[in-house]
Structure formats: structure tokens, C-alpha cells
Image 1: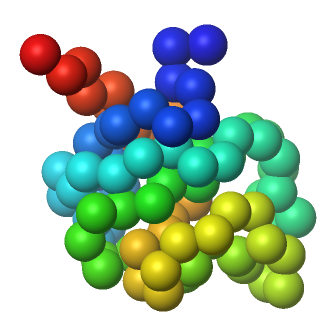
Image 2 (image 1 turned 180 degrees about the vertical axis):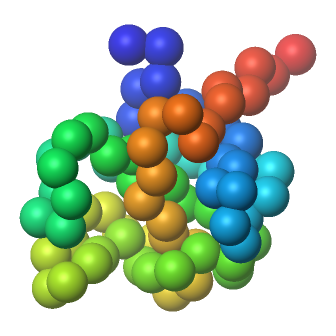
Length: 80
């Protein structure tokens, strides 16, 4: 997988998060929507959660640093 847990990404949700950097902390199914979701720990407190949603913990991060997105909302950052 080219987007494994731990890799650094840029997130752009087209809503309230524009080009913010974070790390993938979760990849998989969720209770809130069907399909595969990516749980991202953002470097800035612009997220919506702490890695949990609806009482289910998917990963841990500081409050407001977590966000769940589809694959098309992230782009991998390649370190030089």
C-alpha cells in the first residue's frame, strides 16, 4: 500500500481543512460510514476529534488533531 499507517500526508477536505499536514494513524472500516477511511493525526488543531467518533476509538491523538477522510482527500508527502 502506498499509503501505510505512519506515512506523512497533506489533507485537503474541500471544506474546512486545506493543505494541512498529518500522519495516517488508521486505515479501515468505520461504524459511521461504509467503505475504507483514513484516520489522520493533523499537526495543527484544526481537526474534528481525538481519533474517536461516536464512542468508537480508532486511534489516539490530541483533541482537535484528528480527522477521518477518504483516500481522495490525502496526498503522500515524500521526504527529501
